[in-house]
Length: 264
Image 1: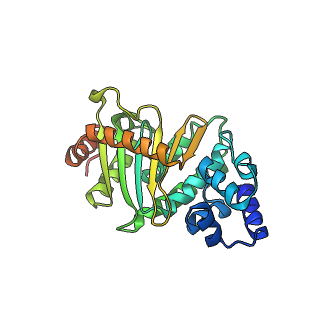
Image 2: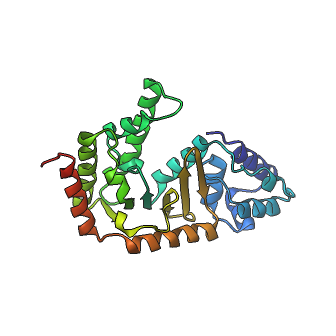
Image 3: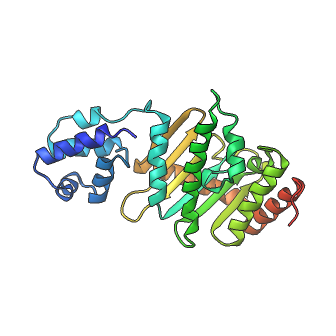
């Protein structure tokens, strides 16, 4: 991922003779937040950039230089992926496909086979490896805490066919049974709900503010403005309140896996 902004911020900080902590104090931010921006792990909010300009006496240079909404989706996703590895709490919502960290390899390949323009086998292999590496965060039995909210359409869409779907749903069931993740299903009978326009991930950290990542067709956005993150969190909480309880969600997933032909 390109880190032009972070490199330039570091240059300005060093030129001003400030440590990361001193800049953080002047800009009313945490040192770790400054560190993440300089390393390219965070895209600063507009308010972050305004405060940094003020602390460094750079006018509105940092604000004007702030990455715009047309930054490549791949760059935004890479930032979100790195944050995912640092998060202590992750809450996912999926509208039509299983979230990446819960996907089985065969399900991943079935999803990737629909890419346009078509991907080469080598490109698919590279993405599969990356997603499997992402899923390794679930190998830790305690952190991060992961809650997943699934639209029932995720279970009903036969990605890759019945056998792959049975395997995929059973994998999720096992993660729930092992108490590694919590999964709640928003039933189709509910009708409209607050999260029906995109998929999203909410992440919390030990030493920096929470963020939200939303993704749609060929677009993605990383949100770290407090007001927007709170608004997205509120929509998530509202949708979660309408979802099936844990045990009912688990029963629905088990029955759906059996409908696809899986038997333990």
